[in-house]
Each structure stands twice: as C-alpha cells, then as structure tokens.
Image (cartoon, rainbow, N blue to C red; front, side, top):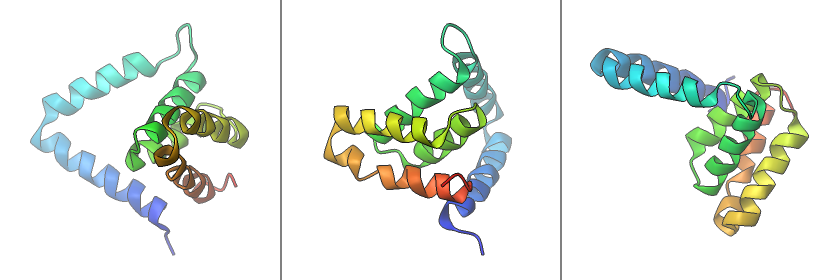
Amino acid sequence: MENEVQLFYKDFTRSIQKLSKESPKMIKSFKAFHDQVMKGGVLGEREKELIALGIAVAVHCIPCIRLHTQAAITAGANKEEIIEAASVAVLIAGGLAYTHVPEVMKTLEAMGVV
C-alpha cells in the first residue's frame, strides 16, 4: 500500500507531465533555470539541496519539502544533515517551520532512510 508521500510523487509527476503539454515553454524555462542554479558550483549540489530544503521548511511548502528532501538524499546528503538543515529553518522561522519538520521525517521514512 502506498503512503501519502509516495502518492504525492506519482501525482506530482503526472501533473507536471500534463502541464508540460499545456505550457511547454514555462516548464522548459523553469527546468532550465532550476538546473542551472542547482548544479554544482562553488557550492555543491548537496549543499544547495540542503539550503533549498531549509527554505522549504521555513516557508511551509510541503511539496518543496518533499522534493528537496528527496533531491538532497539523491545528491548525497544523509538523514542527520537533512534534519539539521530543517532545524536551522526552525531557528530562523520559528513555530510554523517546526510544525513542518514532520513532513521531512515522513519523506525520509517513505524513502526508507529512517
């Protein structure tokens, strides 16, 4: 049985595929921008994904939390680094960010990391 995080990934992928047919220029432009910003440079991909995850927690974006948690793992981050990045977001953004840290844990669990 699929959990809510796994269902999110399937639905998100389907939605982006549909949107790419309806608005290919927007999808292509955003993806190019995303790929350019997130590729390794002075900061590596792992560090950029941890930063993005912290921002996602701070701004309470559940889809962003799920996507950047997954991307951070793919980029080589471990569970401890991910939880620490989320903790920094809580320090900066307070209680509202704190209430979104469980989304990080759900995503890690769905990925088999916790």
